[in-house]
Image (tube, rainbow, N blue to C red; front, side, top):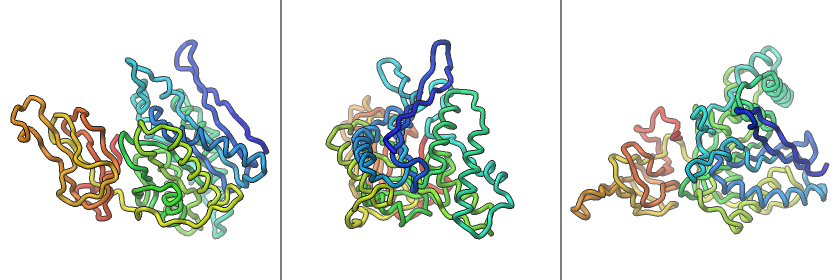
Length: 383
C-alpha cells in the first residue's frame, strides 16, 4: 500500500483558531511490527524533525518497492500547539502557554482502564493477551471525550501509537551527545540494538518505569503495570518505547539529519519492519546505566556559567565540570565557584556557556553506573 498522509483537526481554543496534526503512514495497514516515530513534542526541539525529513523519502521509496513489511507511522512535527508559540521573537515550545503543562508530561496512563476491560480474560497465551490488551487500549482512547486542544492532541496521538511494537520519541537537549532513555525491561534486546545503530553515547534506564508520565514512558509502562497487576497471566513487554535525545538544540543540518535517517532506517531493517540486510550489529558505545546513577549538577548560586569540559567527556568523581562566576566580584579567579561531578561517568548533557544560572538551575547531567544516594526517589528528569 502506498504512502498515505492524514490530517487530524484539533479543536479551536479561540474564535477563528484551530490547528492540525499531520501523520504519515508507510507499509501495509495492520502490518507487524508496527513502528511509531514522532519528533518535536517539545516543539522547539527540531533535530529529530530533521532526521525524519530525511527518513520519509527513504520510507516512501521502500514502500513503492514493496519492501516495508510492517506499518510505519510518522509524525514529523507532532505538536502544532507548541509550533505556534512565538513570543517576543522567540519560539517557546516546551510548555503549553495556556495551561503551563510541559508537553512531555501527563500523557495518558491507560493501565487502569485497560485492566477493567481485560479482567478475567487473560491467560497463558501471550499473543492472545497482547491482542486483547491492544484492543482494550484503543477502545479506552475511543471512549475519551477530550475538552481542550492539548487533551485532544494527546488522545489523537496515542490512538496512532498505543498498539505499536516500537515507539520512538525524538527529542534533543540544549548541548548534548546522542543519548537514550529506556525501560530496564528493554535492555539488552531492542534497546541495545537501537543504541548501537544510532551511535548513542549514553543510555539511561528507568526500572520499572518512569513516574513522570512522559510519552515514551506511558507506552512501556502500560505493559509493566499490567504484568504486575495480573501476575498469573502471560503479559510480555510488547512495546519497546524509547526517548531519543538527538544531541543539542542547534545541531540541525543536512549532514547530521541524513546520517540520523540512515541509522534509523538500518534499525528498522534490523527489527524486521523493512526488508533488507542491516549488517552486523556493533557494540554500543556505552552500556545502559540506571537513572538513579545519573548525577545532576545544580547551580548553588546565581552567576553566569563557563564549562571546563565538553559534552561527551568522561569524568571522575570530584572533577570540576563548570564554574559559576559572580559578575559583580572583582577578585578574578576568586569570583569563580566550581561545580563538581559526584560520580564517574559520561557528561552527556550540559547547558551552553555564558548562560545565566540561578540557585537550583540544572547545569549538567552525568551517566554513571552506580546508584547515588542523593538521587533516591527522583525520576531523573527535570521539568
